[in-house]
Image (cartoon, rainbow, N blue to C red; front, side, top):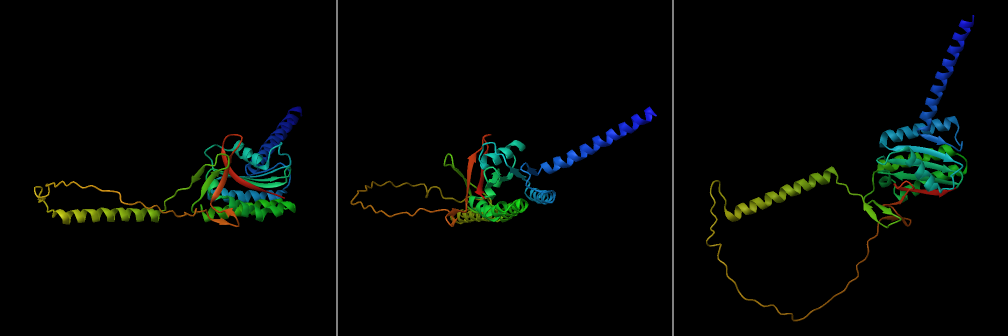
Length: 276
């Protein structure tokens, strides 16, 4: 009887262990996308946000996190989001951290890697304009979903022409350079055409024939030197104003600039936030 009781207890303990492990695995999988430290999302909202993140990760190959906090540990929303992303990713990653910061009452998007190129200042501002109102009305799940949709839209639209990263700490600019397949093919055709033209002109000038070279070097090797002196008679200087070119803008915002800064770990991040 005692032996049987021990077997039952052992079996019960095993069930508890496996049940706990399974629950931990589910929680770990959830935590891989959503970190609701402030407890703002219910289970259905968490599932919806997770699904949206999975779809975005599959499309972009980025790391994507949705984070809430009611204790920013004395940090700004930007610093909290940057540090959160850096703590879970490698330096060669690309991605974003979406933050609802109840401590600073701010919605923030932190970008890293190639995500900085896609999400310019203007695009981030547009996304936040659409999303922050949901945070103000306590619709936190919808706030995250709206941000995810905006990020996906920016990715689908591609990197804007003339995009550049602007380091707000040093003033340095880093322009995005890319060559499309059409541009590469066109350049190849131009190069081939130029080479063919040079060949044909040279062939006609020197009358080249197969196996024969008829260039009359004797008649073409005479040199006649003359003495010529140029004198400056008059000098005129004209001035005209050159207008500075500005980057494209919408409502005073740069549509091509992605402002960047350095996080506490030394990585370069872009991003932006909006109070609610």
